[in-house]
Image (cartoon, rainbow, N blue to C red; front, side):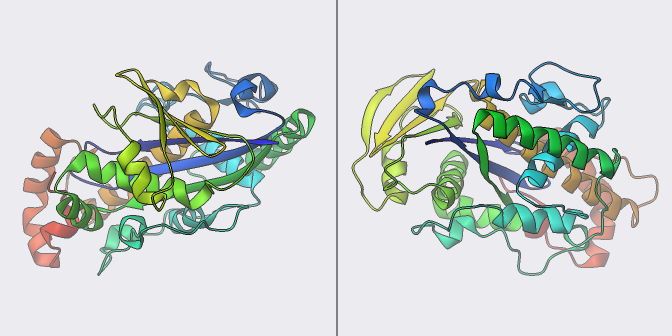
Length: 328
């Protein structure tokens, strides 16, 4: 058996709302480099849009979700995947807790608490706001999809072993960026420490890790060494399109368009689902305090407008800029 691991993020650019990074781990028969997880999951999922209620679109979240389409396609895939792991979150708060802990592996040593922690010192109302799940689909559909997905996995001798997310709210993000003095470096350290939580570099099983590139970065060997206690990291090749490394029995790829890989695509959907739900709760919180407030997705230009619109309410509620606003 081998392991396929995929990692992606959502919300790196905005000034408002969380950065979400997710990793998914799959156990597959034989060498992971040679295993086609898309073919194995063809009975339940593909990258193409579908109107069939018991089929899933697993692809880059930008292809699956838009405000006009709504959350249904994201929700089907994410909640069905969590059901494969025996998890049924009923609220956004439960989803947050589940994604911080869901793994059939024990935690690997070596994570840095500062980069892993998403807690804030005094959670504002939108972080504890009750939001029932699912939001757009029938809950019974999740069980039906998961049953078919489990059967698909059984036939292919594939097991989903973990889905884990790092949900970094602005206050914590600001702390990490100040420590790193570089936003891209902060993303890399958050991501690699999350990866380390589900990946044991001393595991003798063949393992393939695929991640989207972090901005324009081409070199990751020094960053890998930070989370690997100075284990030997061998650079196979580094380029604009793809940087490849070997650590023991593991090959790690940081590549453009990584969502073409099934484990990364699912991670992308989880990130986007959490980010969109979080922004829904955020917008609802502020709408309760500011009449006729236009919602925001949190991206820079509109975020400035939104912050100006809520300024009086923010002051009245005693919510600091550090809790609300990402500095970079």
